[in-house]
Amino acid sequence: MFRRERSIPLRGSAAALCNNLSVLQLPVRNLTHFGVVHGPSAQLLSAAPEGVPLAQRQLQAKEGAGVSPPLITQVHWCVLPFRVLLVLTSHRGIQMYESDGSVMVYWHALDAGDASLVQAVFARGIAASGHFICVGMWSGRVLVFDIPAKGPNIVLSEELAGHQTPITDIATEPAQGQDCVADMVTADDSGLLCVWQSGPEFKLLTRIPGFGVPCPSVQLWQGTIAAGYGNGQVRLYEASTGTLHVQIDAHARAICALDLAPEVGKLLSAAEDTFVHIWQLSRSPEGGYIEVEHCHGECVPDTQVCGARFCDPSGSSFAVTGYDLAEILRFSSVR
Image (cartoon, rainbow, N blue to C red; front, side, top):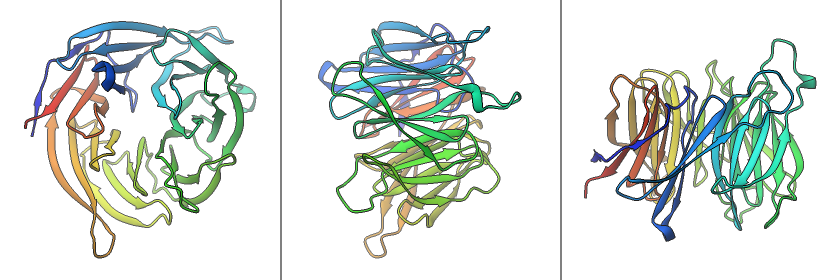
């Protein structure tokens, strides 16, 4: 069971975008960072465990070329082996900052040259894999940036081609040192999933076809892909083969966010039906199949939920954002 904790006030509401909440826990300092976007700005907040906001910072989208202010599409902390970077994506480019947002270390402008006149240009979908940061594009390509241990000498090392429609989300997990390990999955507006092996050169391992609805959010845990779809379904696939293990009719409306607590295998799903659900994933010892148990459901009344994340790797607390909701809602487990 979870109970409502003290919420964290925002200067404005979260934009009605999928995956519109990023969380970075700093156990050493007993702090949690939250990131939310709305229009051309991103709000960064730091809070102590009791929910008291300690600091706020507002970041603006870099203008680039254009006449109207660019809109930020996502904010996400990327935890690399040797540093943590904050990444913003927008309709003009990709911005990378030091983790507290104090210094911008890299700017990559989007090239609209290959976009048609009716096609929106934007970046969306951010994940770290080893010493790389991967960012999805409106064209279906995924940009791979090689990140140095320190400093601004970031290099665009590769562009991955596996999708024909805009990227929606990217998920990664640390490789376990096995051969042909599937440690990254990308999703797009058609519902197609591409499974990759990361490395100096990324390798496409398999494609999991869509079925006519977008896949706004995706997660990866111990070789299992959790994909949330526009029809409210959550599907669990074997990453290495693309085999469907479980199909859950989890929500009545489109899913807007998934998250995983890696230490315990808890899956969080949030959707436009105002519900947030928590599921326990496990593998059966006999056949190795994925088993799912529903653990908790939370309704956020009269709210278009647009972001939800666990606040710690054990899944003992989570946070939720909503459109036209000027606060971050926090819930923690009752021990």
